[in-house]
Amino acid sequence: WENVDTRAQRALERKRGQVRNGVRNVVIIDACAVGRIGEWPEVIAKLPGTDFAKIGAVILFDQVCVALPLRTRRRWRVVKNPSASMQIPETLLSAFELLDESTYYGVAIKPRLSMC
Image 1 (spheres, rainbow, N blue to C red):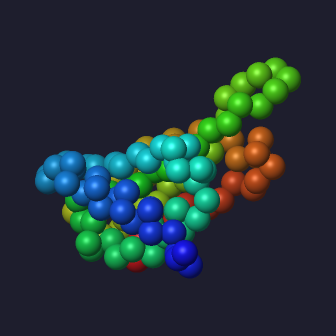
Image 2: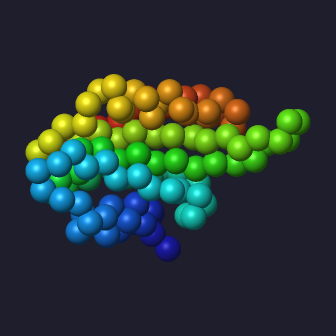
């Protein structure tokens, strides 16, 4: 048993080899497969951004179906990398944050995080 969920870091490490140099890279992680977003954004925000210089931002989402009427609702979290070689435009990051439907989960919308 570990005190820290290392799956978030391992997931980001696997993506590192898939991103290219010289482009604005956004990594999107479907957290549904791992049992919800949980503390993944906070774990990723503690990682040194310089180690992930090709990744401008990490976007995490999960979803749930809610009844009456039956709809799919998604939570979105944005973790920006200020040390990225190519920064992601603010308008794109804000657009992902506007998609966040956390209030339907009974959770307050959380602010954007930045990697160290």
